[in-house]
Image (tube, rainbow, N blue to C red; front, side, top):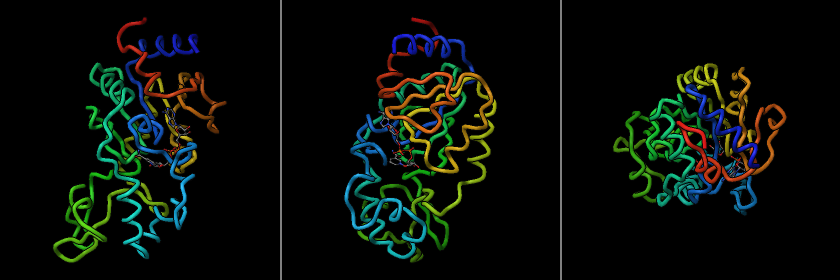
Length: 244
Ligand code: NAD
């Protein structure tokens, strides 16, 4: 691992167009469970599997049950950015990193100070009325019981992309543009099994594809550098401007 850490440090030091592509594993060190780890949400028992509850059809048909799960499992107010979020925000400030492309909906990259964040699956912090389009913050969801309603009577929906829904065109375009122009693409904390998001990394054509993950992914063979471990711990060892 020491060799890999040294090479990663060298590449980071030489980079000024880095892009980070991440998923739920980036926030597990902040206390938010992911889906597919051993203690992830997919291993816990509910009346329905998480991918069923978090689907467009389920939201429309069983909105109250959706919100019970969503408030309980998808919103974690005590979570704070960990060293992975912080290091990425620092590199953006230093002019080394162009964008964070995330599948996460927790807003922790912005909480750490990142400005250019493409949230492919939306955010728990944005919610809107399905009737009149009025926007609501997270407080509205938290401080209501059952199905949150707009003043106009419409149902309020989280601005997150549920299974069966399409990704926002502008967000996808921005993310692909950033990935295409990256001199280093760092992928971390994702099983790379949720599509179409996972396919976006194919837009990177450089030779510094770095994968940092606890477990294996289908793209391990494509990576130029692989580091297996906790992403917060690994990035905490990295410097932006100088080599160690
Ligand atoms: P996933 O659960 O499918 O995979 C997580 C991956 O991260 C696994 O490969 C795991 O080995 C790895 N991992 C876990 N902790 C890690 C750590 N500390 N360091 C490095 N690697 C670690 O997650 P996914 O690929 O993002 O796809 C699942 C979907 O779940 C996404 O669409 C995302 O929107 C959603 N989700 C988001 C959150 C969140 O916003 N925090 C939480 C749960 C699920």
